[in-house]
Length: 188
Image 1 (cartoon, rainbow, N blue to C red):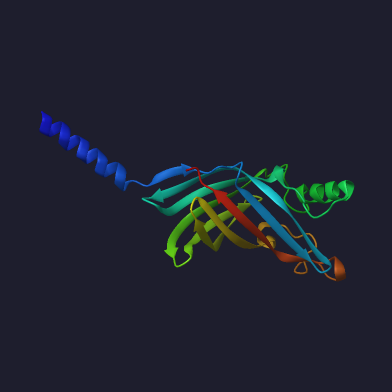
Image 2 (image 1 turned 90 degrees about the horizontal axis):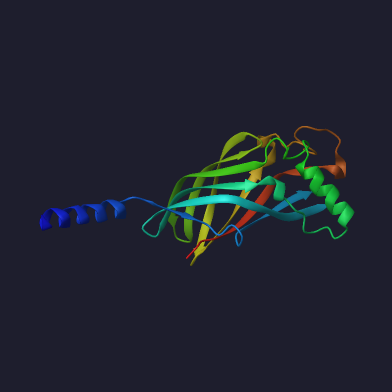
């Protein structure tokens, strides 16, 4: 009987060690900074994670899923409160992210491989109900994951001020690519 119990315990240990572990992130300490550029300048701000789960195999990142609360979008570079609120409202409108209809954006990591500086990741990003593949690098420093994703907003039906869709925009043109810089804090 002791042998059977010992055998079951060893088998259970082997199985749980081989299965990828799922870990939550600290969404209050983690952040996303966005950067959008136009002919006459740029704007920046933050968006908050709603939830995230990362899959680990031993101590290596293997996958995960991030949900982003699009209602949390802010602007950090405009000090005038009225103009700041106007820009944030415009970003939430149908001209940009249609936040009332699409309150969440989702990134699902489909492939993560180790590299010299951390990880090379591939995934599917969903914004405004449209999903497209993305690829980016992730650097790990202890319990912090950092990286940057460059996104062509027009693939997600965010066309306002785009030179691809509108003529004669002059200095009102907004560049199609925007950047999301992320800093993900892992629970210890």
